[in-house]
Image 1 (cartoon, one colour):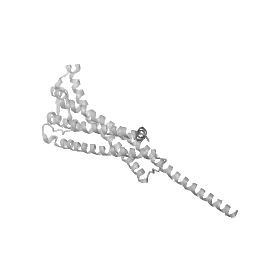
Image 2 (cartoon, rainbow, N blue to C red):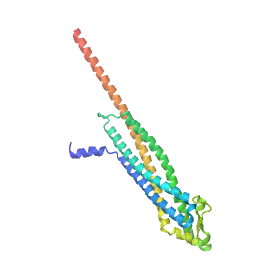
Image 3 (cartoon, one colour):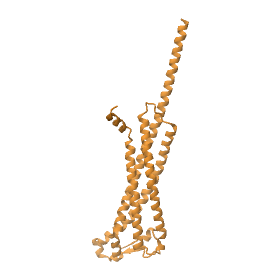
Image 4 (cartoon, rainbow, N blue to C red):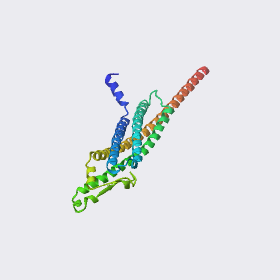
Length: 268
């Protein structure tokens, strides 16, 4: 076999669908974890600077955000390892299908592992749907604040008192009602919307939400691939069982034919 034929054979065994899903999963998780971590830090800075100047008022929120940041570290590590495992499973299944008519045989353990990955990926997909919905909440809150600032700059604001236009984050349950000042109005609100922390956090939340959506798509892609691979492995196992039975019957038929010939010759 030449070098070109060897390369073609190697490329034929690459699970391209699993490879695309792995890249998409890594990209989505990286965007969600990286952008989400930085955006949460910026959110704490905005709250401490403009909405809750007493540390005790937002102490619980700070602890929750720190916990979420640690969870982000765990999510990034887990999905890095899980993506590699699924890619390896794709290589294994592709090899099993390519070698369907050779000496390679799939085992019951391999089919059980593929079924386990299907179940686990389904659970993770449902969980990431919740993460995607949860990541859209801060985007909605920051969009409301940005819309309020845009309304202040419009021509309609010239007929009203700008100081009467406010954003009260206490109504979202982020900080308690006794937090000071709890809301931002007029020029103070305009300064918040024009600050780098707000601008950066708002866009990072959007990117993190998009990353969560990409991860959901990647897990759905993985789920379709794993389901198809499991079906292929099952068909391969049944095919091998059929070939073994057929070979056994052919040998028995040959034995019967040879014994019949021997009996006929001895009779003659």
